[in-house]
Length: 167
Image 1 (cartoon, one colour):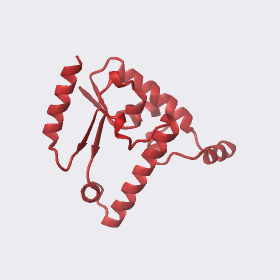
Image 2 (tube, one colour):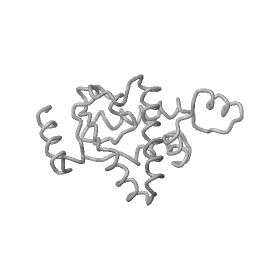
Image 3 (cartoon, one colour):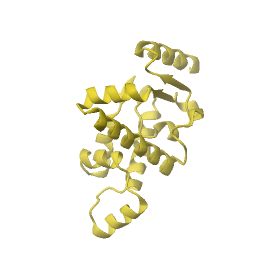
């Protein structure tokens, strides 16, 4: 299986003829409808959130149709049909996420908390706005796993078994 994460950003940037930095920034901070309207008036933004979502959906379908892929985030779980995917939600206690974020991004505890809060709020907003659903509703996932309690290799084994059961 192929893992798709940053490649999604690269493909959207290529399709929309914008920089990967612009796509990444848009993913991190989805503008409100008012902000997008103002940007259009001022001609500042070269990629609207609607164009981003349209491109994202096209890229996801291109990846999902042949299958054999792992797609990280970006609302893919809410776009693809339940019988065409295995939706995973990986969770961990806040203190574990803070520790991991501090280590990965070299942030202080205070900045790691802010970062986590911002990223999670943007993910909720994106999924709510474009897929009209609650990212925290566990009924949208096939499996919710606490990564602080389950080892990565165990998660991989469980997912493999789920994939084999679907074929």
